[in-house]
Length: 176
Image 1 (cartoon, helix red, strand yellow):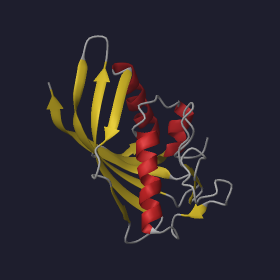
Image 2: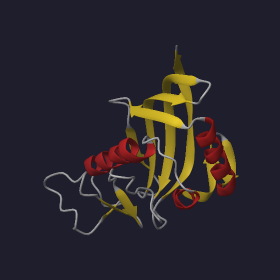
Image 3: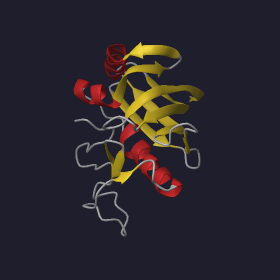
Image 4: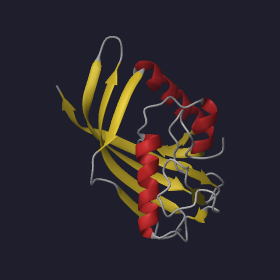
């Protein structure tokens, strides 16, 4: 699948195709027609962009679901600024993600209300910087970790499907 967002089981997410957004029926506001053509990111109002990115973060990024290798190939650019490592290759990111899934097989995340920031690049309207805080709980057989973290993403919608070109973040607080 060549899109940043997709359906995960019964959950329908915002779908990015090319440099456009279209809405899955489960998330479409009453005034939106899910069968209508997708809207260009560059021409989307700030309010609609904010809403679409919030749906992406809530229903996809923080869903806690394992992504397949093919899905990760689609959502990550070939080279990404990944948690401070400049020019990290997608294959290395995929290995890192798969290792994370094995280490923490049970994961849940929740967006902290009021923390989502969506800012278009000053150079290219189709590049969007996203920052948000979240609560998390991860579990393995031996350990549980809970806390609050922050994520920083740069999404590039100039490529078909959109891709993550920067991903970073950190734990802000650990809960006992």
